[in-house]
Length: 114
Length: 114
Image (cartoon, rainbow over all chains, first blue to last red; front, side):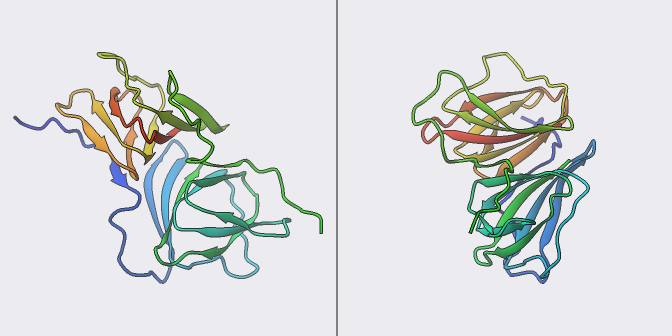
């Protein structure tokens, strides 16, 4: 019986990862449409350069899928720690920086920019 | 030292779940803004009623965070199985139905509607 399977975009967030650390964070757009971008990010110890901040024009909803990370929000006096399942909504221009990511196993993020 | 912690929306997808099965799927909006809704869904064996289809005006990106599920896409002749980390992009009006969800431990979905 011939398969009727359609070509819908699918994937798995935690499979098919490169087996070794990357010099940069690995960012992969999973879907981008109607001004919304869903992105997988793999960090292996990467952090935001010291005294640099992400300052984004769009809102971002971000989740740690696996691994672990720490994030500093501008104006806060301590980092926030993220374990698998932890998410945060970062409104546009909420300045933040990644201060630590678990390298091994890698830290997988899911980010929705809108 | 006084905490400077801001009131940003945060949470964890797999903690703080009800300890027993629910008569209906449990849907919780995590953030809704600019026409985008990020939602957590807990299924404990729930499925779409037989011969009914989801037929949505919006695009949906959906992920199985934990548990397991099967989905039928209209026009396909077999179900697709979803394990943790598996995602699919369902364009608006791509008719689909949930044919099975793992009840115990519950199946947690993350859905982005846009």
